[in-house]
Image (cartoon, rainbow, N blue to C red):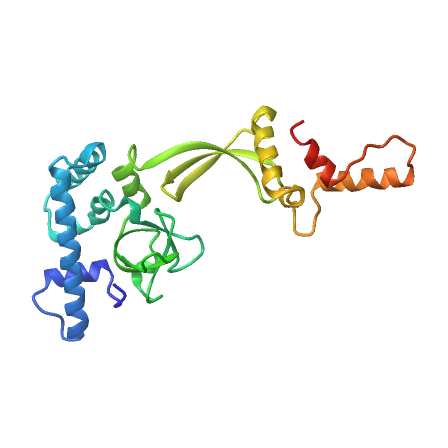
Length: 267
């Protein structure tokens, strides 16, 4: 929660009988209550997974958790909580949060919404990935995170690979220069976990995308400039042909304008 206590301090509260002499009793009690909530939710998910109700996703998650437990010679509460994020991700895969690059306390959720903690000083606000167990905000675009557990990308892949995590090959128009490119994308819902470039798509694959973009956005919105203030080469060519036609009306120059190009698109 946004009380300044991260997951480690919450776990520590369960391992100590009383707070230290310098600790604030109220904050200690809140942190302990949060840790108990987290442990209870982990236990419920663990029982569901163990019962086989989760299908392939559940069996993979149970196997990963069992392997981690076997790896540790002394399975203390601290050791179990280190893997709680991976365990809970199977039950809350629609609430996986990915921190937006270069931003603190600004997350994107796998269900397409945004999320943040109430306090920017929350230690988990700098985590790369979270499992959000308690959210509010109703149907608002951005939710408030009340209770979450951190996890790494490798833990997320181990828990959800082959189930909620999908790979796809995408063809898209790059906003920087309007070129058609291809990439292989690893996704979890609305989140992009990783991507790698693929060879330039052949014309027969690029053409339908460009025509669809032209019809949807119009010529000027579809043809992006390379750098700010730089005109797209296609628009520059249209302007040059129009100038030549004006200077040499009998030269047989084609009637190129935006309306004509749009009308002939796909012809």
